[in-house]
Image: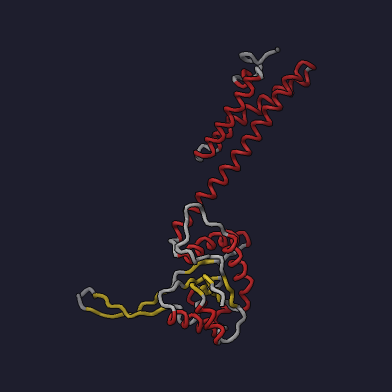
Length: 284
């Protein structure tokens, strides 16, 4: 039988959400620097069991060939006895294996399958120094896909995809999340740098064309002044807008410098030094 790194079990009503989560995990690309714990591990090998059928030998074989177990929890989970049986079997036959809970809807205590919430008797010391016992309820740490809007659900799905993937790999979620965020910031920085370069190049081009056209009349002169203002504003406001992002700022400053150098080569660099009409901004 095929080996799986995780088997998601869910009620038939929750199959669509199980498929969405599985697809997001399969499409997720690990950030650079993250290595798989072992050569046989592949977080994209996922099976979904959401038929609502009774627990049988086929289910036992499936769990035996699954390294992790994912339990999708909703009010409908309580109506599928096989989910609790799967959880019990996996705990008994694969002790120490990772079990991942994912809450889709409802409150934890109302949606966790039977046996998921553990109760333990613990001893504690009373103020009078006598020893007593109490029963503590231990809830599993669960991923949370509950959301009020489609936009919020999309954000939660993106976030929980990283956390569930980390659990499948046996990596601390915070470590993978931090690497994921750094990769996301680098991507944004690259996009910003491209936009900034295009804007600066466009304003420089308009500036040059306007300068050439200035000799042809008053309308062209106004165009030149407008182009100068746009270029100066772009070069001043972009660095200020991204002052908190050192990587983006470095790209923008580099693009600004290139624009200045190119205009200097055309003999137009002086136009950016002062407003039109001042210090060389007059007629040519």
